Image (cartoon, rainbow, N blue to C red; front, side, top):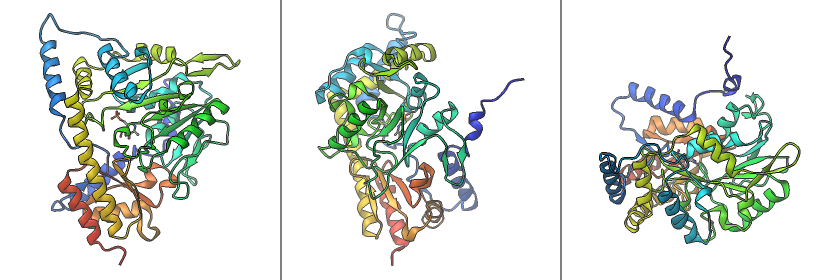
Length: 413
Ligand code: PLP
């Protein structure tokens, strides 16, 4: 008799965005005339940059010629891309890396969900609350948690790090014993970002308490403040205690093209049960060689083009476009009386619901009265209750119209 992985049964419902999609579909069916604007899911709307499209065309032509055709590539990515990453994302910030510390993949969601596999089955992990749901759900599926406690809306055996207005929505190092900690900086969903000082404290805490930081910097291109590091490896010593994940989804519009990478420094080590230090890099290499046959050549050429002067300039122009949307959301809602966080180093605005309204109720109100789709904060964890996340990835026109519609509800009169 085949048994199911019962850890899956602990998950209380669908993936958050599947629930939202269902609600929106139900509303649309009943109100076909309503013109819905989506500022919910963090998907981009700007097309790929011309330099990236040109590189893809060229790579497709190469694949069509016997002399330049490529079959399976290196599991950890072509050297041309890994070198471009090191030069463009790290040496430019005085961080030196070796090519075999970089692992190219087909998306940060895959990496974030799978990285826990190289740690012990008995691991204890910590996540910010609210949090990008994949960190938590992937560990639930792997059996790293207890049951879901419906009253607390939390899993047993997980260390939650509350992010509230009082602590500036910044997770503080755990006091409990923890083996790995997921940190997203700038944060999805709250849009806030930790400073150099704060990250230095995290690295110090990881060294003292021997935990590993899984550092997700999917939104690093959106950083505008000088005091916010773009990579955790800008902090001295972080290479001993951190793994960094990056994605081309939000910096180069690759949500449908799919490319990302993980940096596992040689110096980063965890321990066997009898206390022997083991480097994590060969473990991730072994894992990738077994489970993954590489990111498509055409896509890796596309990612490489992101680092060309034209590619970078074109992508940064798109990031600036989204950041202007973020400011339209932040300023427009603040003028309408809302309290808004984020949207300074991030394409996300974290908006307090009016008059203590529950986040799903406010989501429903905006859907039914303004025809604007948002993401209820509670979907990201219990401390997200009382907030909504709005994304700046819409078109300019839709962003302006959505904010005008919300302001017209005059909820603070
Ligand atoms: N990490 C964070 C914090 C994200 O918000 C997202 C996507 O929204 C991802 C990872 C996944 O990125 P990718 O599209 O590369 O899978």
